[in-house]
Length: 185
Image (tube, rainbow, N blue to C red; front, side, top):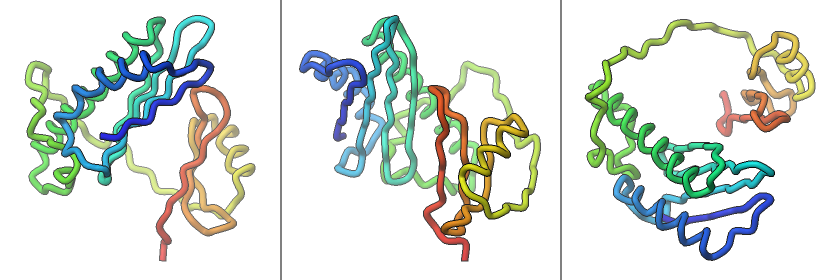
């Protein structure tokens, strides 16, 4: 796994880097290690505490965990625990799905996970389906409409390239945009 460790408001020293890489090495058993698997860690320091974002990019799926903690090293441990929980949940979901549509075998050694067994099984079902007509608009209009309906996201058709996009409110302030890469036609 390739590591990319970035610091915001903090200098990532060799000690911090080696400690984070050592802690993340326990995740190696869950991935078929090759150059296609990259792990990016962003460490942010605040006046009180820190925030650790760990993202593991694979060709089939990305895994992400974000943790705020007073102790940087404890935060890394919590983020790794969170990622392992996500992967165990995915393993359970794949075991229940007989269709085999989730093809993660090329990047994730999913057999190395134990499915959730000690927790009561909750059937995850879609509780609501909603269809929307996507109107062509620019980002500013989409943000305005999102604010008007008091949602954290808004899906629209970008009037510049005609692709589906989603604008969302970020936890750290500001807005983000998710844009589809594929064409609709």
